[in-house]
Length: 375
Ligand SMILES: Nc1nc2c(ncn2[C@@H]2O[C@H](COP(=O)(O)OP(=O)(O)OP(=O)(O)O)[C@@H](O)[C@H]2O)c(=O)[nH]1
Ligand SMILES: [Mg+2]
Image (cartoon, rainbow, N blue to C red):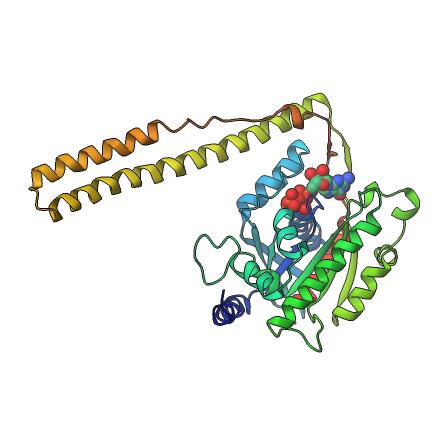
């Protein structure tokens, strides 16, 4: 990586994402990012739009398949989403219009979820050189060779949502250390791309406490702001790194323990998903084999012609080369589908049906996002 390349990447990312109203969800593995992004959509359509005093209309303009599948699994079978695959970073885009009155006009809201695994790799891992981190973020998994990779929004999002998982044994200690580390990395990135003021992040930040149903009775009754006070290290990091709107929210879904039947439903779903992925990979491998076979043939033919043999002879050699390549592939061990049911057969928590969640907090969260995304 040289400095010029990096500057170019930064400019690409800036111009691609400058006008996008991107909301970045940041949080550890399994902290609840996907659940929050899905319930935000649910709350928007089922609570915010129908109950607002302003007249709103909302439509999903992107990511409806993933959202319908995930929400469908929760609402119908009480299934929590599968972990987000590290090779994807789902985007859900929605447009919210004010029909009449003052309101914010049209707001396009784009939520970008990410896998906790990538979050750890890009924001929690130590880097000796911050420019290396920036480069990794901008180029991460850019398989489609676009001007910037799918995770460039980590640098150029309009709003950041930091997820704090309350379900751990000692959430305050651990989670505040992660969040503080992440904010420090983000601040460093913002300074590098000159998107900070006086060395501070200016973007609005929401701190979202998830799984608050798992807190003890006394702690659960605290407000979101009071929960933040349990993390003095995070507060002081925010003070020195952030100068902008900051708001806290607490979110939960009512959960219950799975029954043996529930476990079977979940295993069946997970196995089907794993099989689909296996078949996709197999298809990908077969396609690349086909290409390699064809290439071996045309290479051999070109070589034969270049060496002065006639067309017929060249075709024979091409056929031989294709067969040799086919044989080589045939000798490779066949891949088999493995699915480890035993490791996922213990009961875990499922969504208690009918779905009940902290929708008043989601309504506040949506209002806050609408206000802050417009700036
Ligand atoms: N008790 C409780 N558990 C929850 C709640 N929300 C999520 N969970 C649990 O947390 C798990 C992870 O939630 P996700 O939303 O998939 O987490 P994530 O951050 O998207 O995870 P990755 O994509 O793997 O990084 C779920 O499978 C549930 O078991 C909640 O409100 N209460
Ligand atoms: Mg996820």
